[in-house]
Amino acid sequence: MNEDSKMPDMSVEIAGVKWKNPVTVASGTFGSGIEYADFVDLNGLGAVTTKGVATYPWEGNDTIRVAETTGGMLNAIGLQNPGMETFIERDIPFLNKYDTVKIVNVVGKTLEEYVEAVKMLSGQPVDMLEINISCPNVKEGGIAFGQDPKAAAEVTRAVKEVSEKPVIMKLSPNVTSIQKMAGAVEEAGADAVSLINTLTGMKIDIQKKTFLLANKTGGLSGPAIKPVAVRMVYEVAQAVNIPIIGMGGICCAEDAIEFMLAGATAVSVGTANFHNPKVTIEIVEGIKKYLLDNNIENVNDLIGAVR
Amino acid sequence: MLYHENVSVIRNESLTNDIYDMRFRSRDISAAAKPGQFINVYCNDSSRLLPRPISICEVNGEEIRIVYRVAGKGTKELSGIRPGEKINVTGPAGNGYDVDMINQTYSSVMLFGGGVGIPPMVELSKRLKIKTDVFLGYRDCLFLNEDFCDDANIHIATEDGSAGTRGNVLDALKASGVDADLICACGPLPMLRAIKKYAEESGKKAYYSMEERMACGVGACLGCVCKTVEKDGHSKVNNTRVCADGPVFDASAIII
Ligand SMILES: Cc1cc2nc3c(=O)[nH]c(=O)nc-3n(C[C@H](O)[C@H](O)[C@H](O)COP(=O)(O)OP(=O)(O)OC[C@H]3O[C@@H](n4cnc5c(N)ncnc54)[C@H](O)[C@@H]3O)c2cc1C
Ligand SMILES: Cc1cc2nc3c(=O)[nH]c(=O)nc-3n(C[C@H](O)[C@H](O)[C@H](O)COP(=O)(O)O)c2cc1C
Ligand code: FES
Image 1 (cartoon, rainbow over the protein chains, first blue to last red):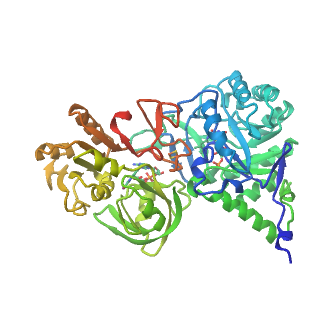
Image 2 (image 1 turned 180 degrees about the horizontal axis):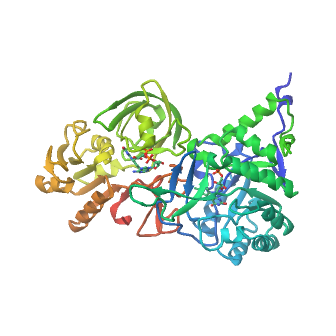
């Protein structure tokens, strides 16, 4: 018997872009993949999502920038990045050696900076853009756009106008209604949404009687936030018709499958890379095994199956 | 090249009441390891997600030795691992010392190690072929002082005066009257600052190992940066990744 004929179809499609499987990495946890290429064959991932990049280099926040918490971590990197010029010269050619979908995460401090960054990417061999309007660690821009449906819609519209590539809007969980935010960016033309970014948190050093992070607050990520993220993916799936890329605490195939059943078309793996640098590929294999074990021929059958 | 492996612990014993000595075997990591590099040690309790960076203390054949202080929950867990049990590690991480360059460029060196900054100096001293003086600073109990290569002159300082010079490594240096062309140092920030000052005043070249909180431990997350004098080639801003571009830096390039 031909073994291959039994292999389930792992491919998904988001805004006309075909991924070979539904697994990517969460922006900021994987660089542009360069540092993880020792551990993971990037060809095996559905997509690589890069660290947020802006028009010019950003210094980021002072240290301490990261702190472990029970089942999670706080980060306040502050979107340090080398700027678009270096990104185009160094990171895009690296990614181009691999047969995977390339998603560039874009940040800006003003509407104009988002637009400019997207313009700088025109003509570049990347497949999709993810617009980060949800970083809790920078004062200007970022989160300011991500907590107000009107502002989020405005960025979406402006970016869509200049982008040659499908646009994914990355949503913050630090809002009263994530459904309203998702609805607003869908109406403004977003091709997809990704969620969740980190939840604002704080840790205090009781010996030094001060904040552990130099930024005082940081974004909470990792398995500790997973139930919140699954709930939000489910809510957004009920509210919009565009595809969802789900993330927040995914550590294994079972976690990824939960997100897909809640309504995600694809998933991103973030903090789990820090605990196991090979975890992404293990998740791809684990999803395949789940489909085989359950006689499911197509991974798309999972999407939103729980209502 | 970095390797992520599930390794068997060969030995894990206490050297003092809170310092432990662990050995594990890894062909790839030991073959690639340089002094000054470190191992990301992962906790088996996955509620503790982040790797613990621990310096390579010695490489013997395929065996890696790490020596660590029980500082918090992760190292506490590590201290309970018994021989035969397995842990996940990634390494060898970071840049480490360019031993060939040092052997070719300098005729004598002073190594300074303070507390758990001592372990990386053991392997470094083994690979250096030039005249070596080692200054070790302790709170009270000594460890690793007998593990340096026979050719190295060992000078000890203790805070409580129970062994060697009372005070810190610079007090021990003063007491010894030693001089050398190059300084390599690893230890707490106040010690590094004092050594940096001494190096500047005496016009000596110095390298030191930086410590910073890490998340990925492999250069991807930008969690572990320290400030640089010049714009960094990788980041394009005035900071650099301790885990990937360090932990060993030219003292004149880093702001501490
Ligand atoms: C490059 C490098 C090499 C090191 N080499 C050694 C060594 O050879 N021997 C040794 O005993 N110690 C070494 N350390 C310090 C060691 O990493 C910490 O003591 C250890 O991470 C504490 O973990 P914990 O779970 O016990 O403490 P917790 O306080 O419970 O740790 C909580 C979190 O903070 C981090 N953290 C806490 N203290 C430090 C610290 N001082 N530096 C960096 N991260 C910290 C932990 O990694 C963890 O993510 C080194 C640190 C660095 C950066
Ligand atoms: C260290 C770190 C850096 C991050 N940087 C970015 C970023 O540059 N852009 C972005 O959109 N999200 C960033 N995030 C958020 C993640 O992409 C993701 O949304 C979040 O961490 C939840 O997923 P996880 O629990 O799997 O990590 C970062 C997260 C971490 C932990
Ligand atoms: S710890 Fe992630 S870049 Fe150094």
